[in-house]
Image (cartoon, rainbow over all chains, first blue to last red; front, side, top):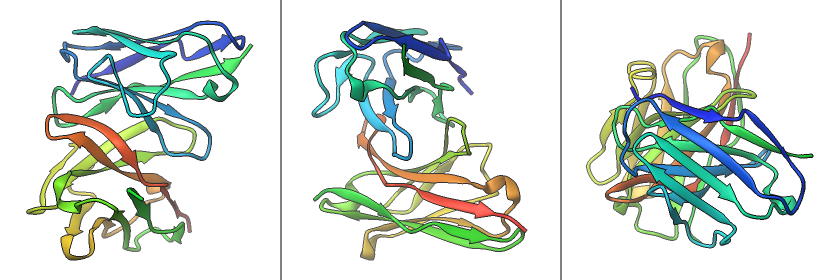
Length: 108
Length: 120
């Protein structure tokens, strides 16, 4: 099973600032990595797939990069609606597909 | 509207059985695998398993193999997650999700979630 480790656990950011979230895989997942946003009481929402492709209707301020074992989600200018928990997920090697433990982006 | 609609919140006792559902609407249900994802209270996401609605082929995470059963009834565009004997540790929110494409197991669409509470 591939382990996914996200850092930091919590990120405190002011609105308008840039946020950088990291995800590390215990072995290479090529570019088979997705990022999700989850707000309290809601289902996750797909932001990025294949490491860097934005999903439908996702704003351009969200971008993904990386390959192999190191990945980054960048939110270029945080809006109020972006404060949430973010998860990465690998879909390279199964079973099972695995998620990171999440990074909470909170208002500074 | 294209969506996955899940059955409602449920409260059960340990040892009881349960089946929750996930109905696809607005798209060809057999075109995309459905996965189930668990989220325990205050915790992260765990992939449980998936099913191909065309032929009911299933894959399970080793962590859930033998404890849950995933099935589908394509005639009514519905996937199911089933337990024979619930434990208190099964208390969680359960999501169904549809993958993006044949080569991409990122989940582009999610159900609203079903909260399962198991308590004596």
